[in-house]
Image (tube, rainbow, N blue to C red; front, top):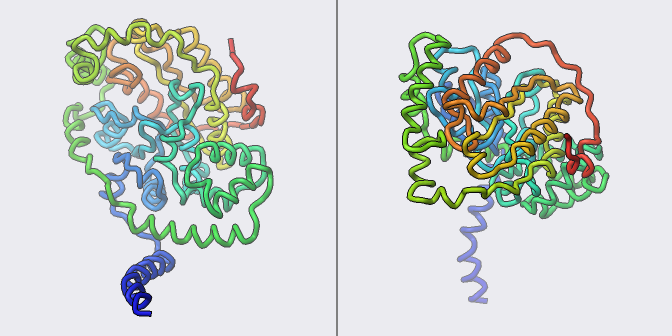
Amino acid sequence: MKKKHTLLLAIAPVIIALGVVAMLLGIPRKAKHYSQNQLELASISLAYNVFKGQSIKTQAMDHGYVPFFGSSELARLDFTHPSVLAAKYHRPYRPFLLGRAGTQSLAQYFEMQDMLPQLHHRKAIVIVSPQWFTKHGQLSPAFKIFYSPLATTSWLLKAKPSPTDQYAAKRLLAMHSQANKGVMGSAVRRMATGHSITGSQRQYLQFRSKMLHNEDQLFAQLKIINKLPRLHKQERRLPATYNRAQLFRLANRIGKRSTDNNRLGIDKQLYKKRLSHGRIKHMRNRQIHYDYLHSPEYSDLELLLSTFKQQGTDVMFVIPPVNGKWARYTGLPMKMMAQNTKKIKQQLQSQGFDQIVDLSRDGNKPYFMQDTIHLGWQGWLTLDQRVKPFLEQRQTRPKLHLNNYYFSKTWQNKVVK
């Protein structure tokens, strides 16, 4: 009896603490208001909790920010980066960067599910990297990093046993994330087999959603690194007034200076860190057998298209190039790369998505790339010539018509010649 009493005294504080936390997270909260400075911080932070959360990014998009969906290229915050140009020249839009190394179509699709009203009849930019289209597509370890219980709960509460949601559920299960476990896992498995979630599952998910929203509001600003000094430093490198010719000359001059220790047009700091002292020799002809033509990523991309169609989002898709000198050195098959671009464009255009910036043939232009696969000084400026008018001017709304064929393995493995 004494032992039981001692044990009870030991665990009582833990039980009370858990109860207090549950009570705090379960109490309905008034939507938090973020300052303009907080929104600007979040917009360039690329923080995991911002990507996986809802409150701060949705409020930003209600205040003039435009989602730029992508991956590792978004982190290159130099003077020609979209966020720097928009801030320096006081444009009517500001990019909100969503994605970093490891985010592909599947992670982006689920991340979108708790910000659908902010996509409704609005604009977005999507950078589609050729490197996503590998044999395996989205890798499970990377997906787990970006997995959001909040977004997944939002998706399940709206999902129907449609071909789109069935495919999304099957891909979610294949990632072996936390979504496979417990009540949520049971609900996802029902959706994957073409069944709606049960009433009890819906009740649980509604309660869980309230707790996750409260948690998001409490912790949305944690771990946000202040990159504003870096942004302002890059702004100071730009001319006081926007001048296209002057900007391209500046980009050419800085690009030349920044790549003067190698013949591949790679930023010298990156080259020194990863490829100098003979290490580059190991990369000669290493990419001869790369294949971006057979991949589940094509069907994952279709998930994004289904969301944009459903919400009436006006989207501009960007297909970046690879560094031409690097491709020749590593033996990357350029015929295959051209087929990858053609396949992506066919999937987009056949369904009415005609706003495409195809930069795939520009990888040989001087200072267009900053390294092997990321846009550089000239590249960002070239893209800006298309992005700026797209976001600032009224666009004719496209007529979209989706085809479930793009969810099939037949399409995933089809070679478009």
